[in-house]
Amino acid sequence: EAMSGKKKGKLALYWAASCGGCEIAVLAISEKILDVAAAFDIVFWPCATDGKVRDVEKMADGEIDVCLFNGGIRTSEQEYMAQLLRRKAKVLVAFGSCAHEGCIPGLANLNNRQEVFDAVYRQQDSTENPRDARPEHETDMPEGKLYLPVFYDTLKTLGQTVPVDYYLPGCPPEADNILAAVTAIITGKLPPRGSVIGAATTVCDECKRTR
Image 1 (cartoon, rainbow, N blue to C red):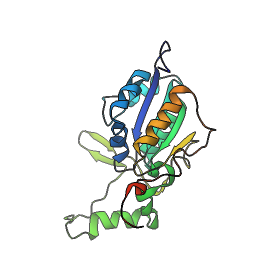
Image 2 (cartoon, rainbow, N blue to C red; image 1 turned 90 degrees about the horizontal axis):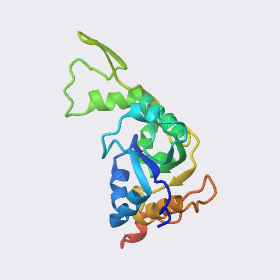
Image 3 (cartoon, rainbow, N blue to C red; image 1 turned 90 degrees about the vertical axis):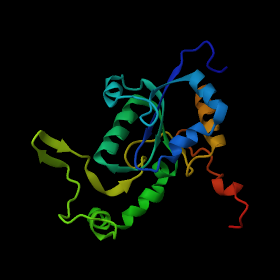
Image 4 (cartoon, rainbow, N blue to C red; image 1 turned 60 degrees about the vertical axis):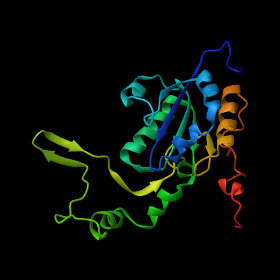
């Protein structure tokens, strides 16, 4: 209703260093997803739609109204996408605890890049890697060079990488908080920039076990 008679907004969602639960959480708002669809055209959501990075690159700066960005920044590709979506989005939301404060992927910061690769590619009992091969940024092949994103020594949060407008924590964010945030964006009734939406609630509130 808030968007009736108005041009639909543009919404983007992106998934960086995280488990993907935040993407599923968006669907947890159930039939209210139809309200989101009525208010926004989803212009980029690699998890669910066939959007291309080159299409986002061609957009005007600020053309996307809202971007929900989940996950920390561990690779050069994720850093590039954070910078790109920051330029293209009027409102950038650090969506979920990994984007907000690192969460589980951030625990890898207890080790450096070399130690992480040793654990994954050498030390596991199930690993068969007699050549001790490791991911390389560039690999020469008969067809030409192949490229992988650079794996950084340290994971950073979204806010440590680009300016963030709002934070929506949770692992994943709760459906009520997602809906509240989307409703605020749709109606224009947003809190001051830099606010944490739903800071006082966690999924633990619903657990019947004693903390």
